[in-house]
Amino acid sequence: MKVEDIKNVLIVGSGTMGQQIGFQCALYDCNVTLYDIKKEMLEKAMERINRIANRMIREGRITQEKAQEAISRIKTTDDMKQAAKDADIVSESVPEDPKLKGKVFGELNTLCPKHTIFTSNTSTLLPSMFAEATGRPEKFLAYHFHDIRMTNVVDVMPHPGTSPEYVQLVKEFAERTGLAPIVLHKESIGYVFNYMFSGLFESALTLASRDIAAVEDIDRVWMGIMRAFIGPFGLMDSVGLDTVWHINNYWAQKTGDKQKIRNANFVKQYVDRGELGQKTRKGFYTYPNPLFTSADFLKGIK
Image (tube, rainbow, N blue to C red; front, top):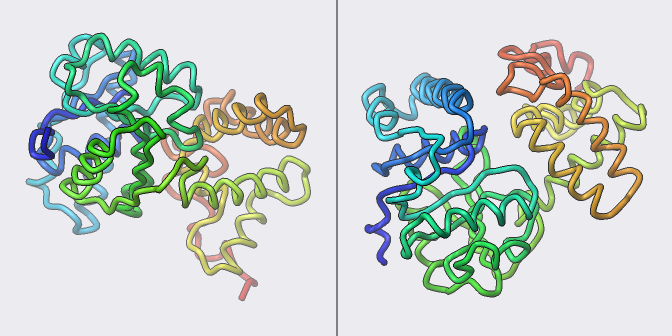
């Protein structure tokens, strides 16, 4: 297979990252199928994809015509068999549970063509944790996106059984779709940026869950000192608090660490209320005009 042969992209999971990945691929002339288990999830996903497109138009990054052409290349389905039949590459963004990811890929292995490349957008898991369950470990690797509204950097991370041919193919595919791939030499939990980023999130959650400081004040400290436009809790809202909870809960249960459990429970109270961040218009902040964007949020901090 050559990179130009990758034409049909299957996105498994229509959440925040699935939407962004699908739209990015569609912008670069790929046919995209967005799969999820419920039609209502797919309807919401298309609404959010339209919002992503409109934001990019307002920022002058794409034209109205380009956006409409990209959206026309995206179709949705809740039928996995239909979704898988013509896929050249799969990008998976289901919750951070290796057993669930392995199960999904195992099903896809029976439905996708033999040439289909499998990739996971996992944030903190290692692909080797569920590589064998995919049924085609040599064609499987992690292909991880960050927020495409902010950066074009992506991570390409093979596991020990990934064929170098497919590492190179995914790298070339990333470049073909307007992205800047970082190829890791070996597996690392959290890749490069997320390895550092997760430390920030854990520190912020520890301060908040111990009631050492308010969420807003923790963000004020980070933004005021680092001269950043957003703090860790604003960033968590961007990622999605359901995703933040899944990651924290997985490692809390795996390690039994009391502070990790406390941090996971702190996020879960928001998830239980359906306050998942930007995608539900409410999380640690209320959107579309979160408090941290107001002119006086850092008032008094110089």
